[in-house]
Image (cartoon, rainbow, N blue to C red; front, side, top):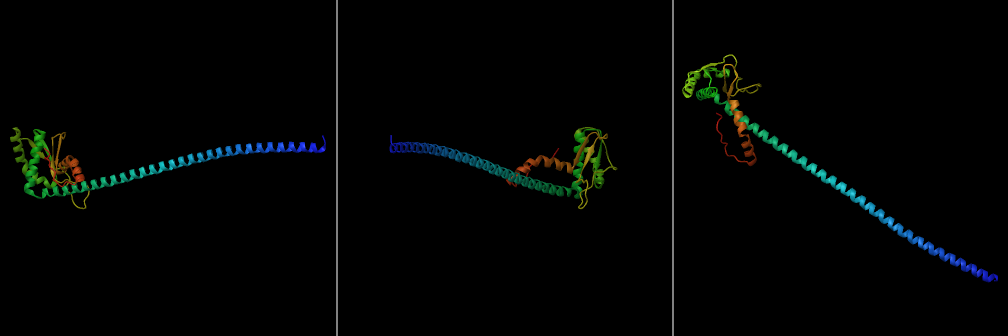
Length: 237
């Protein structure tokens, strides 16, 4: 084999090796491209998942914040409503107290009222002796009606005249006065047994408290409905 044939063989071998290398390189490039695309797709999907998770988290936070804001708003509205209702109830009670405070200014009707309170107290106690406590300014009126009250009670209960005394040492608080703070009494009296074990509070303040407590659900209902119709109730017996 001469030199030309040797060179030809060498060129053929070089060409074959180069072709093999190029084909192998192409295969490697294709695999690498496929792997790169797969990895890129994985990265994209991972980022999409991460973004979606972050979006869901932020959406939940927004929804939660809105719920909290809504609840806070409702609570604030409820508190404002309750404060308004309580303020209105206080003004209603204040108006009732001012009106009741005028009862004792009418001597004749107030004396009959005190007499009725004594009779009622005696009928409840049903004791042969009792003690009456009143305001200092009402002492004279109570003393003027106590005898007739005892007679009426004895007649109604069909018993002997009870021994009823008026406490002229310890009095109930006086009527409300503007600028003066402390315990007050709108009027009425307290009837007790001589030993003080049974106490019947027949003051106007106690009666107002009973009526107000009884009518409070109805008052609240009227405030909600805006119904101006007058309340109906029976006086405490």
